[in-house]
Image 1: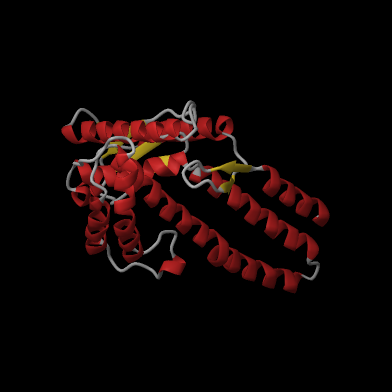
Image 2: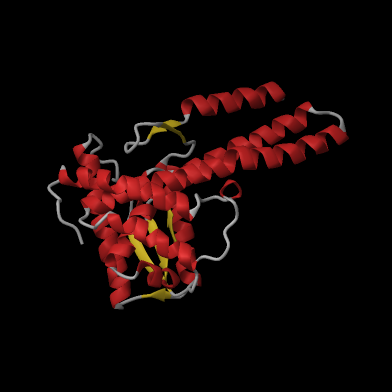
Length: 268
């Protein structure tokens, strides 16, 4: 049984790789779009029935307009860099939900939700573009499927350990150590790497869409000022605000250079 689990894990790790077009790196992904997108779309539709969707307002229209500009910019970049048709299965949708939570999120396949609570932090259309670029980037890079794939490997590792260890006391010790170690040493860093990757891709495509990438760091300065005491970075799923501000400040000139390749040299 142990050998079967290990062999299955190795097989999945070897065959389930997909190239991230924005980084050129191989990513761990066991879930094809044809499998994960319908599940995500169904969950998104269910969410909309259970929450207060804002429709017809200037803010709701702004969310949709910015989302469309960002997605179009992403498609321009993909087409120009040898990935035509990459987005053919995506069904972009941008929804504003009345909720004071300071958050936005994206599901696989392009279903994006903004909560009204984040709009004061965004302040304007360019601020919305910062957040939208980040969320669109999560979809482009298949981060949802990658997290599910990593979770599967984490579970397989736990099963393998429990099968191999016969002594109940040692098995209990293993479970505690494995749970803590795999979370702090693998899953949380994996999540933080996705957030950093989404920041880098997002600032690039917002610039191609005509939004000023310098504003990305400014948004995170506002986010930092608004936030309560954050946990240490190594205990968090996200990089610290300071890390993000530093990164985005460094990446803004590079984003402008990338936008210039598409004839975009002035920004909102």
